[in-house]
Structure formats: structure tokens, C-alpha cells
Image (cartoon, rainbow, N blue to C red):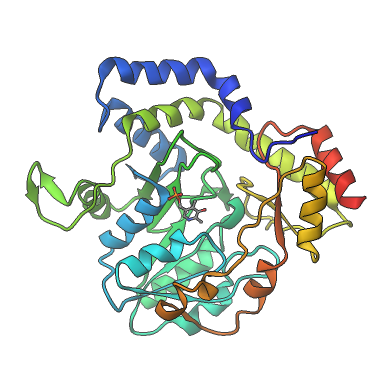
Length: 362
Ligand SMILES: *Cc1c(COP(=O)(O)O)cnc(C)c1O
């Protein structure tokens, strides 16, 4: 038996006619940069989330960087975020000379613990950057309220949560700015690098469109410092084709997640899901004490696993001298040793999940 961790082949097989046709159309018109698919995708994604603007960019990391640049984050500023995330979340803060200020996470969802944010705010704080980890939105209403009372901006790192809902609203439309990623293994992936920024603020959208193309207001007139941050037309075409069954995929992801919950109930603690929001299960993550042994056992039986993430960012060598942790890193450090993600994709069958359960309890 060999169960894929994610199954991009099954997805391509299901969507082959649309993906091939979409790619062929780009090859025929030849507008590889800022071709018509770019605006088409931006319109569709904005409509999907409910945000007024969508700006596609070269990657999820570039999305976060451009968002922070548009907010005017500068050297010495502080951005409050979680240490329990992919490195890009903090990387972009440091790249701008600002300081990532970490607080601990909730022990059950692994998202930022909102009750710890206020104590980390200083006169230098400019923004709060929660991550909707594993596909489940953070406590966005509480975070927005704290930000509003201190005049701060909120950027949702929604790289893992595109398609998730929070109190009936879509992830990426829950704060001033939101960033997602189309890295191939994300819930909505392209066939290379890609990402998008969402906002309903017209001025911010205009700034980010300019920053995306070297800060130019019009050709060769540069009114801001920018980046080369566009998303390729071909990658936009792939995402457009994938949107055709995205609704079904989100439903499937929820079903597969619910089936894991049932199968593992009483056997293994799993990442908690809050009742007022949905997860798109970018990862289905459980907590185990003897992780290496469990991973070995699963691997021997043909079941791949992964760890998201083994070292919290305040413990990464490059980040220790340029970041700060406020409070006690109790849960993030303990959970970094215990989290383990299981195979998760829309085409994962119930019988494969039953087999995984059997191996786990053997
Ligand atoms: C994947 C990811 C990113 C970066 O996205 P890329 O498209 O790979 O640059 C940022 N933040 C989080 C939480 C991610 O999972």
C-alpha cells in the first residue's frame, strides 16, 4: 500500500481537459505576463471571498511582503505574530527591518492565543499578523477589535485557509489585508509559485498593484519602492481551471476531516475545530508523544506523514537575534515536538483512512 500525502495526480486527472485547454489558450495568445487570465482570476477570487480587490502576486511570501510594504512597515516597527507557522510569516517582517514579536498559541487549535496579544503591544507596534493555521481561521473578530482599539492593521496570513469560513464570512475577507498562497500543495494550488492579496480598501489596493510592478504608477514612472512580484499568466490559467471543482474539493476536505475526527476519536488527540468556523484542512494534524516511532511505523506501512512545524520560529537560529518573544513559549515549544500531519486531500478514500487508523492503533 502507498497512500499519497497529497494527490495532485488524481486532481489533474479529474481536471485534465480544462487545465490543458486553459494552458493551450495562453500558449496561443502568448501574453505570458499580465495576460487576460490575470484579471479574470482576480475578479473570480475577489467575488469568491467577498473582498473588493484581489491582487495576484508571485507567491504567498511575496503577498505578505507587498502587504507589509503597502502598510509602510519600516525598520524598528514591530509586528505581532505567532511563532508556530511557516518561516515566511516572520521572514517578510525581518526583510523590512521590522521586528517579529511572538506570543504563544492555543494548545488545542495551534492558532495564536488572542488573550496574549494586548500585553505585547508597544508604541512601536504597527500590525498584527495572525496565521489561519492548518486551514482554520484564527480568532479574527477578537484580533480586529484589539487592533482597532490600538490603531493597528491586521494581515491574515491565509496561505493555508483559502476557502475556509469564519462566522459565515470567507477567509481572506476578515481583516484589512489578507494573503494567500497557490503553492502546489495548498488547498488551492497552481503548478509553480503564486499567491494573492485581498483587501476592500481602494487606496491600499492601488498601492499594492503599483508595488507589485516595481512601484510604477505608469510605465517607467516609479513613485514607490516596489518589487518584481507578478504572478505568471500560465499559473493564473491553472488556478482558473482548478476553481471549477474547488467547491466540491472544499466539501470533500471537510468530509475527509470529519471522517478522521470520527475514526480517531478516543484514540488520538487531534487539532480542535471551533464551531463558528470551518477548516479547509490544508493539513490534518494530530498530537502524538513518541512522534518519530509513530512516523516510522506509518512509513513502513506506506503512509507518509509530515511535521508542521518542528521548530517554533523564535527558536530558529536566524530569528533569535532579530525577534522577540513576549510571555512564556509554553504550548508552541511543547507542540512542536508533538504535531504530526496525516495524508490529506480531496480524493482520499474512506478505506485508506480506515487503513491509516488501523496502522496507528496497531
Ligand atoms: C505556504 C505558506 C506561506 C508562503 O507561501 P509561498 O507561496 O510558499 O511563498 C506563508 N505562510 C504560511 C502560513 C504558509 O503555509
